[in-house]
Length: 301
Image (cartoon, rainbow, N blue to C red):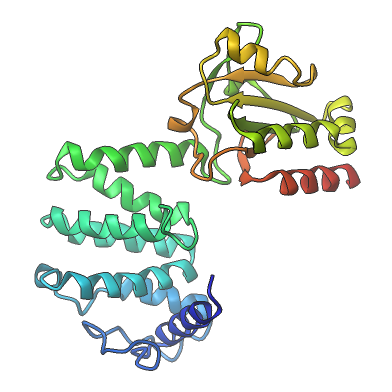
């Protein structure tokens, strides 16, 4: 992130969460008045919680979307507040906003697309899955939004619910190199490492070689603490079986050409997930350097 933009965002969030109108941080007056946080609320997160609950109080939503760019700008301010609020306050705020827009399906869809761009897509400065999911689900649940518009949000919501950090890892079928049909939901270990790869990806080959050569990883596998499941995004045909013939015998090796339609692989391959003994997602989108660092840390425990 550009340093100036980082400073700008910090100043804007702090200004808004102290109840000011952020005049020093944005060029124009806010599109509508922001609520003033009572002086009795001192803690930064508590002030953001208050603003999350009351941000839209003075916005006439039935008319405000006539100036969509202004609403987009205000929505960015709103998201900066939600990111600093408690999880409960943020989610409750999004739920209330969606409720207020029940009779404005096009406007709810507009905000969901803004949320997608800022929290989920490749254009986002940071992926904030827990904050984006309620916007996607609000679109899916809305009875007056057409099915075609809902389809992308429904797909994204499904993927996120399968792979939310801290939440249960969803089922993922795959075919092993021996030809057996398996599912990731039946794989378990103290630390389950899922290595998503592509046969035509040179970075995947290098990641596989480095992980296989890592002493800490090998020892943890031998000790029964770590299990590695390598899943290729390809058809489990004979050509693929030949390409993975040199994968370690201690690894479970499988293929599912549609794995990226079930699991969150926005960052491409190679892509490492870590799933704990309760089958909850602890990490995702790890690269090989991060993966090896996790293995070293585990070995020190």
